[in-house]
Amino acid sequence: MAVGTNAPVIIKRKKVVGGDGHHGGAWKVAYADFVTAMMAFFLLMWLLNATTEKQRKGIADYFNPTIPVNRVSGGGEGAFGGDSIFSEETLIQRGTGATQPSPSPDRQAKGEIGSGPVEQKDDKGTNSADAEAETQALKKLEDMINGKSGETILSEQMMRHVVTRLTDEGLIIELFDIEGVPLFDANDRPTEILEQLTEVIGGAFGVVRNKVSVAGHVSARPVVLLDNPVWDISTLRAQTVRKMLEDHGVAPARIERVTGFADRKPAVSRPMAVRNNRIELTLLRSDLRN
View 1 (cartoon, rainbow, N blue to C red):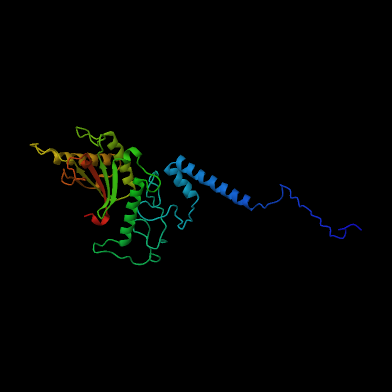
View 2 (tube, one colour):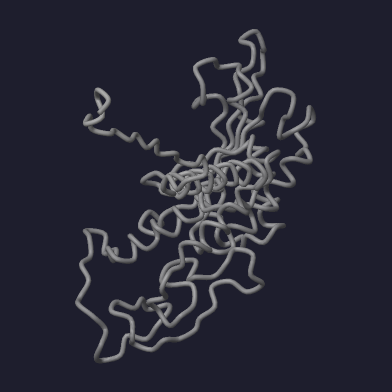
């Protein structure tokens, strides 16, 4: 017998794994989700760049539907009554009887029942609920002028001449000169931009019932002038704008006062600055009317 014939036999088997074996597919799902999210992100960036403010507001409203809580379309009380400023007939009286919890006398009948709790009045006898409704109506008009509601009634060219503010006196709409684009020419005749402004704002004033105040302001003139015309100019300009508003639908009875302030109340610190040439139109609060 040969040496080593009783030694154990060791057999090595080499396991060969193919290159196309299964490694799991979870990463593919994660990658697909990532690509989808990136596509949605770039689509959003494109939409923001390619659409106007009005179109973006419409898209947002589509994805944010509201549930009506009032059987009168558009909602409610106050000066607008749910109607658009561009509708042919504004402030339509739909007549909902005494179904409102606190109906106002000029919109719905109170009736003997269902008229809601007795509302508080201040020292001037003003109904606090009516005052709040009036404030909301003025704020809505201000937002519409400034475009905060998604749609403005003024063009971009006109917006450069307008600034608004809501005060204790009412809604003040300030129309002012900018460098190279005045509201009045050298002969104190209204320019084209002022004609456009008064036409649009006069139409907007038609959706509320508040009284209107017109105030004229001008920049200071050189002190060397013997006869300073600032009082006459500011008064003349205020009267001119009053007539223009009346021509564009504001009832003469709504004009509460027309005032010329000369250069006594400058808008900026430099008395001779162009910015001080302005017209202030104020929708007066009801509790301030005499």
